[in-house]
Image (cartoon, rainbow, N blue to C red; front, side, top):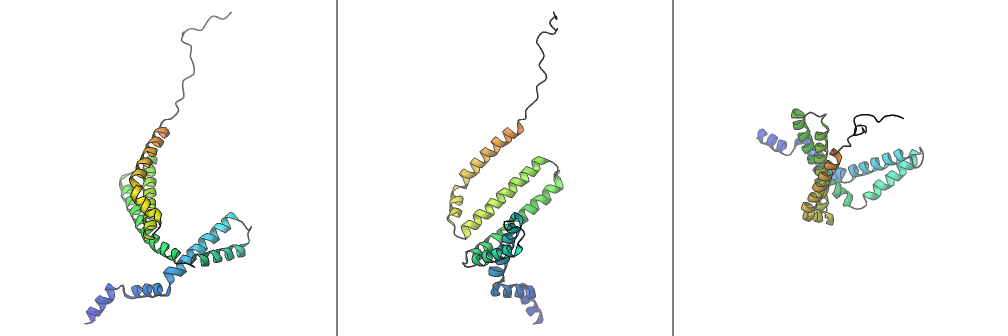
Amino acid sequence: MGGLIFLANFMEGGAIGQLLSSWEQAGFFSYLLPFLLIFALIFGILNQIKLFKDNKAINAIIALAVGFMALQFPMVSEFFSEIFPRLGIGLAIILVILILAGMFIDPKNSGIMYVMLGIGVVITIVVLVQTAGAVGWSSGSWWGENWPMIAGVVFILAVIAIIVGSSSKKTLPPHRPFWPFEPPKN
């Protein structure tokens, strides 16, 4: 009987699972973490742009007000609960690609880095579009219906950029007259 209780406790996540469940019921993930994230971003941006010189009290009050106002409606909590799991999956995919590419490809090759950047951009777009669709924004369905056209336009623009970028200006040799001898000087 003791083994059965241990197995049931293990399958539910044990003490850590119970702790996370109690935090979730207390609103830790729906309110506290989104508030802290918004507060930190606004406070950091205001400190960097130095809108109010070095007055950190005003920056903190503004960040505090924006953080609390953002949580007034459940939209922020829903958005964060949709985007961050997808972001975690996207980052895991990028990590796996980087590990596999690092085993076989020279990272000093700039072409490979552009391919990695492209993969990262595609994953970012997929995460944002999927999140927009999950929270009910109308743009999510628009992207879902029109992605082949957008992918075609992006592909054509990328081909044009590669062609233009790869054509380098070649320096011409100095001009030489056709006649191999210099004309006589008077």
